[in-house]
Image 1 (cartoon, rainbow, N blue to C red):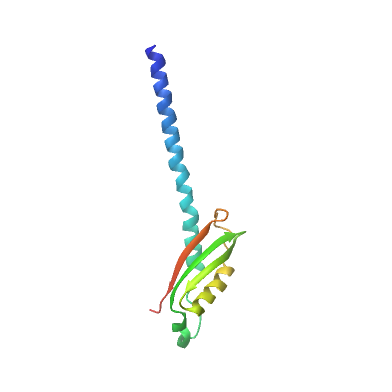
Image 2: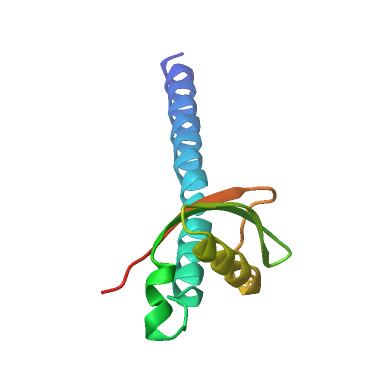
Length: 118
């Protein structure tokens, strides 16, 4: 009788450990697409290549909401006080290839871009 109870407790503890380990492993992969997206955007979006006299026209902050569909960025909205900066970001984000990013289906990303002259 003691042996049967011991094996029942051992089985319950084993199941608990397996479930707990599975839950912690399931959460970690969600971080990778966000990091891949950050890397992709930081390597592809730069300060506009415009003459120095017009660079101040592109200073400011823009909040962008978008999703990835078939390896391309679909911009949902761009909010910025600088209209030229908003148009530039829309145009440049549509050019970015995101085939290396394993994004979830219908997941929206919200990113803030800040452009400053140094």
